[in-house]
Length: 292
Image (cartoon, rainbow, N blue to C red; front, side):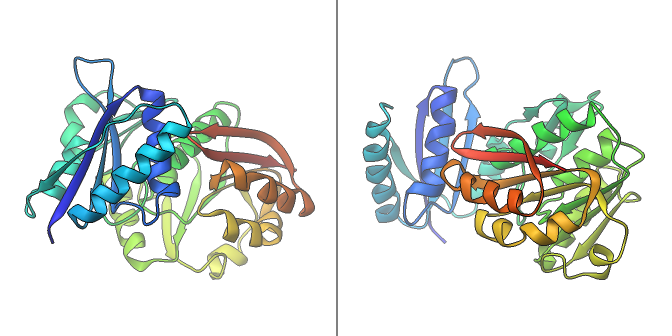
């Protein structure tokens, strides 16, 4: 498949906003979006991949209009990318991401992560979650904050994707028992492989499940910590069920929620008996932390 790449440089804060616009405000969105620091400069680079030159140019035009409304000056450049190189180039361009004590990196940056106790190796691939998206980063920051204060014996990572959140908990809390679930069989395979690669497979059980429709999720003791980085609508619908599975002193972290969608999600979980402890906003996305 022939692909076209849209590239632009801007300030770091603007890079986050541009990525959010590309992923949520441009219709149809690009096939893939990444942001990374440009070495030796104060700038960050945003790259987006599209299936055709016409699609890339349409995205560039839509982005320019949206950026103007936010007082962001952008001049996207569009170029063809050789078929055989675009995946490798895209993955190699992803730099390590620091989120609290965690450092999430690809295998190409293994040397840079050496010596970091809470380094998580995740290669961009078929499952969501490399920490380059604000929702994953927001969840990692919440996990870091919560685990500094207490131990969580039983943890559920619902909609695990690449397994990055489950791995983060297992690394930072060596006594935690984690269940990581996903609706997609391939994501479960990827997550299990990433758990093995990061040395936590013995404490993270990966299960394929639609929501909470799995015996291990329904019948075991309540969870001390539940993580769910999915989408606003399914999270809203699952509020009663997730609240029932949360232990009396437990914490619930939700993301995959646009800031404008957060009030409805918050209302649903308050109605289910939970209390909003913290609302973090990052690049247009909300990370919500609830407790009893």
